[in-house]
Image (cartoon, rainbow, N blue to C red; front, side, top):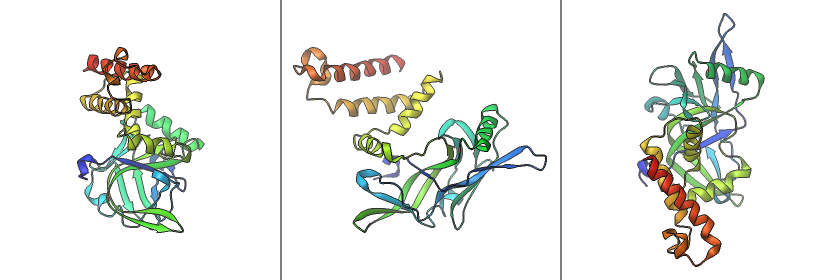
Length: 248
């Protein structure tokens, strides 16, 4: 599978030390912590498989990749960037450490207040796996992530993979639907932010993937489907398709 066709993955860890560092004048200056921890098994993800980030997985990425620090993985809220030197990354004995200098913006100030209150205390990262190894340990399938391409690090309200929603996310990915990306599109749309062409393409792809779950021929219209139980699903798909056509 080429890098262009892989799905960007996101992971969060409970064992992070996310914090606000203050300047000498007492004002908050940086957000620091670990976005990833080495050799810690994840909760079960795809089909019960568990995952572990190996030491060295980020060694090349922190030198090579142009990485953003985002708030909740939202590209509309950029805290910093390695290219502009407002974000620094390094591997240490614990994992992937980051330090970011947020912009002087109200939303960034609000985030730091929430962090100091303890309301936001987890971090996550977005990546593509370039090299991994599959092993079986004590009857469990373990995916060791050996090398990644890194896209972003992000303070988050909720972990990227909670045990309660792993099966739902896995089922959507198996159907060809990247719900993490779609949820970002929905959020931007709800905030009145104009969607881009790539957003439209992703929604169309999701509609097509959902349409494939319907019986043969049922995507051509309710009147052509003799199976009345699928009419509601079919109508929803058609309505979404028409909405996307109007927005294009």
